[in-house]
Image (cartoon, rainbow, N blue to C red; front, side):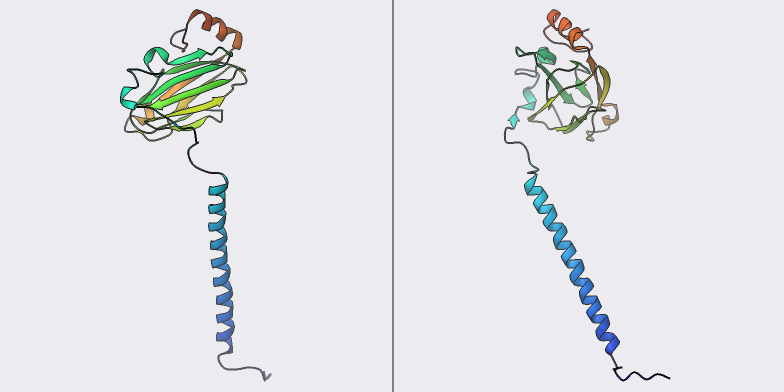
Length: 190
């Protein structure tokens, strides 16, 4: 039999205590590191509204201003770019179908008439929340003609699942030919 001359009663307890302390220090350090990363990324990426936030009175959308019914849809600007304006409201986007040209700078301007909505244009990186009282502005460009679905991705009530629109990207020449004939374009006006 072997006899260990260094064996002390309670020595295992001291070893376990040291190991537990090391693991506790490691766990606390890991938590502090994760909190530091969260704070740094929040400050670094400045996850807050842009400094140029436009406000609008949602109760007067259809009465005056840029979101009156005659102003909705796509319009060609003097510089050749296109501005698309539409309203999100329970349970639809107005107009229901947006007509835009391919390979052209496009500015999308939208607001909500009632509650928070979201929009997501499939197969693109267009994705934003539409908040009542604020104008959401997105700048984009579609590379080629295509059809895209634009569902509301923020729960807005019991009819939410039926809230979607259609974005039809057509050839640039065809779009500008149609724009010469009409001040505002949408798929419905074609």
